[in-house]
Image (cartoon, rainbow, N blue to C red):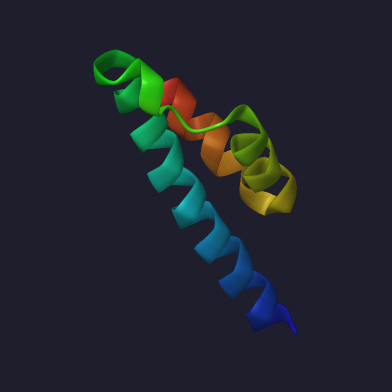
Length: 59
């Protein structure tokens, strides 16, 4: 169970980072192709909140 949890958190964090980076770059280059806010919030709720926060602070 513990291995599954760690795998889940790792996968959701990687997905969150990829989508957050895309959204930040899209905000600068393609404002119409942004990721919807509810997608970012859903990823944070699903377990990617720390990854999203760190990504937003670094970019």
